[in-house]
Every structure is written in C-alpha cells, then in structure tokens.
Length: 163
Length: 275
Image 1: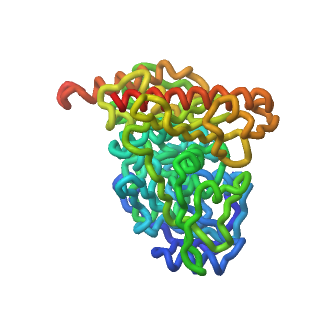
Image 2: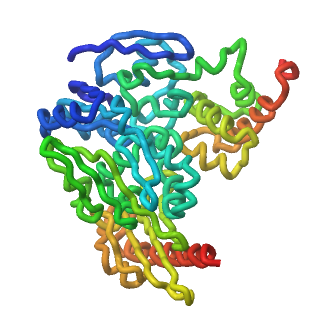
Image 3: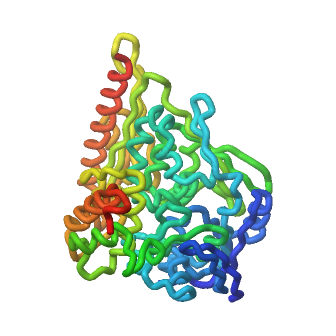
C-alpha cells in the first residue's frame, strides 16, 4: 500500500515521517518516532493507556490515524517532563505510589493533566468520573487519586518553593 | 490488532466528499470522530477498501441554537455540546446524557452526527434524537433530503442512508420553555454502553396537570423507540432479547423502571421550572 508523508508537531518539535494511511497515531509515535512512553493496551479505545494530548485535549492515540495528526500538535508523556526535570504530576505519582507496574501511568498522567487544567482544585467524586476513561489493573485507583490531589498542591505552590 | 490496508481520502469540501462517496459506493466508509469506526478497523470487524475522512471539512465543525432548535454539523465533537452551558440549560436530557457517553477523551473526538449515523441502539444521541423529534439533513449526489429521526433508524447499525449519502447536519428541536426533561441509563460501569436508557420530556398545564409527555427508550430493541409515556405501557412497546449481559425479562423490567424514573424526574423538573 502507498505510503504518505505525515508532518505534525510532537512535544513542540516538528516531525515528518512516511507511513501507510492505516498506521494509527499510537503506532506512529512509538514505531516511527521512537516515543515509546505512549503505551498500547487494548487497541480499541477501552483502556486509555495510549492517551495523548491532541491540541491540548486528551485523545486515544489508537483511535486516530497518524495522517489525521497532520498539522496538529501532539503532546506525549515525554513532552510533559523528563527524569531530571519531572512534571509535578510525575513527582506526585512517584511520591504517592500512584503506580505499580506503570503501564497505565502515561495515559493517566495526561488525562490528569487535562483534568487539573480545568479543575485546579480537584474533587474526589468528580475526579472518579473524569478519569474513568483510564484503567489501572494494579493500584485500585485510590493512590492514583491521591497523587492527582498531591499534584494539584504542587502545581499551586509558587515556582521557587518547588525545587 | 491493526487495521487492514485501505485507500485514504481527506477531502476539504463537502462536494468532493459526496463525489468520492458516490464513486466508492459500498467500498468506502466515512470517518469522522473515529470512536466507533477506528475500533472496528483495529479489530478488523470492518475492512473497507477506502476511507473518506471528514476531518478536513472544517465547515462542518459547528453547532448553534436557532431559536428553539439545536443545530449540529457533521464534524461537531460531543465535547463542544458538553461545554455549551446555554444548550445544557435549555435541555436537561442532553445535559444528563452527555457525561454518560464514553469518557472525556472519547467525547473530545467523537462527533454527535457520527454517533447518529453509526446507529448503535444503546447509544445516547440516537435516543435523544428520537425523543426530541430531530431531523437529519442528508446529502448525496442526487441532492439533499431531510429524514425524521424515527424514520432514520432502520435496525441494528442500519439507517435510511443510501449508498453515497452522508448526514451533514442534525437538528434537535429543544423542549419548550417550562418543560422538564431527563435522561437516565443503567450501565455495568461508568462510560460503558448502556444495558438500557430512557429519556423523557414533560410539559405541564397551567393547573399543574401533565399536558404532554414524551418518552424514548434505547437499548431494548434494534432501534431507539418512541414509547407510550406510561411506564407499564412503555415496557410493552419494546421487544428485548436475551444476551450475554442480561435476560429479556430483566430488560423488560428495566425498561419499565427507567421509564418511570425518567418521566418522574422530567415532571419534577417541569414543576421546578414552573415555580
């Protein structure tokens, strides 16, 4: 099958690669761009592991074709922070043990990122619904919610107090 | 799994999309939000030879309130309606239903019109369309036509669309001011497809009696059904069958219970609005 050129912005950087039209955005990020932080679980939109931000809003990257990303801005877990300079959500997940195996974590952190942007003061009941599109098979969710609440605290602190 | 190979078309205007669809006939499938078609492609339940992607036709990404009618273009994401406080305030049934559709990441991408055209009998928008007497504006090479929601849904994932036609707009007449409405469903987990859903609109007369009531049921038949607005009678209007999730008898009972609750809540809201 004929390949097409795909050009999109990933984590602030313009990326171009060739792929078949049937390539999902998730496979494109992982296989063509080497960004393996985006995890693929169910591949049919149920588990939320492959969640990325598309123009700032969460989307399941297994339910999008890479060619559809043309001209759009994608943020993956790699774009949020690094081991040296972690995002407050990453710090909070580590501090509060919001992960065990870690497979669901990138998706959870990106969904939580969208949630905290719209709800800087999280509410446990509302959070349970708004984060229900991500499945975790290890933690039982309690520590994930605690981590999101902790991240909200960290993000509310002035920049200087964080380091 | 991964999708089987297909040809990919991304037209930038509606006329081009219509011509492509007509030329491809049954070999082409429309892709809008992708929240139903993409899983089917990944699981290879669908193996179209060609995909016509609507996402570049930005002229279809709109919604607006025309007096009493909510008008939704083919590329309007569900999340856009969820964020429109005026629409939610004007119709509680819509406000109730949207948070029940999948999850935020799904509603960010999924389109209202795509959900209607997919015609899953358990999906929320088809039930709302039947409840509110929506009309679907359809375009094909032969021209444009309007289809009433009750005539649009023909069976399980089957609609009145002819090969080469696409839904370009859905028009939902909102309940009159002072009416109450509600949408209730039962699902195994939040965001899952509903075992059953009921939606109602109740209008009161000046003396406080019920002047008019409407009821729609989803998930109990192969299509969403406009049912008698009386709980016991409504259950007789649907024909549920046994499946892995629940036996038919349970579903019939559920239809009655959800109908009662939706009608009750809609009536309560009408009384509150009238005060």
